[in-house]
Length: 285
Ligand SMILES: [Ca+2]
Image (cartoon, rainbow, N blue to C red; front, side, top):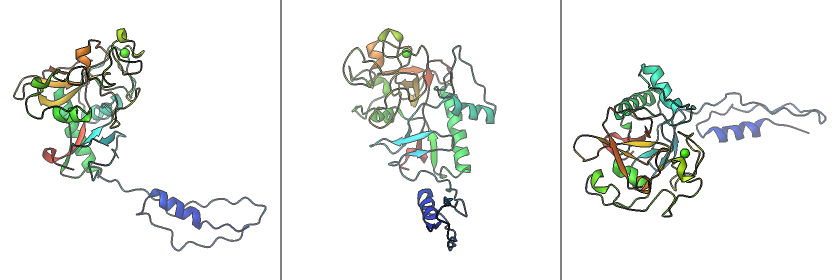
């Protein structure tokens, strides 16, 4: 039989992207004896996809740390599908020398980073923005930042009034949870306090351990509280956290409309964060 390497070159080129350079022209293969297994030829010029920045808020994206992002309709940002993980935060701490505070319980690399203050989260976002721009994975008018309180609500499909402060909206939509409107939560609903029987994790759990919401976002209820950008009262003082944690069991803490808050410098083993990618000033990507 005859074997030509051309088809595999073309296939690899197709799979690796349209900008691939094709070995040109393909050299016709010498006839191969029928009783000798043909060895597929490797592409003459292995193609490495050029790094690219996200171009639209409507398409999924993965950055250089392997953090994944998903679109949330009605927002102009890409949402991190997971909380920032221990392994993500460790790169930041290692490169910058930023102080970390160990937990008293064991955390794996894919657990959400905790003991991270709102101030720490700002520094992480600034560092990641710079890193990704240098790597060609973010354009100069795009930034990493915390989600706003309003964006967080949209990311869980909560139809809230657009005016008013986070404090005004705290628990105003009642009995709506990440899993629906039933109480108590069903098994597998998320990582909450053990008394609810939802899961077997005593403390934090690896991100992605439970089903994602309709936008593909994991742990938008349970595991750890997530910092949002806003002040609770809209002006000053403590910052908003959303989503409840592995420490919570009371129904009204698990409402999607629940806002708790901490001062920006507080480190808590119950609080982590996720980031979004936005155009500068929150503008469209
Ligand atoms: Ca638990």
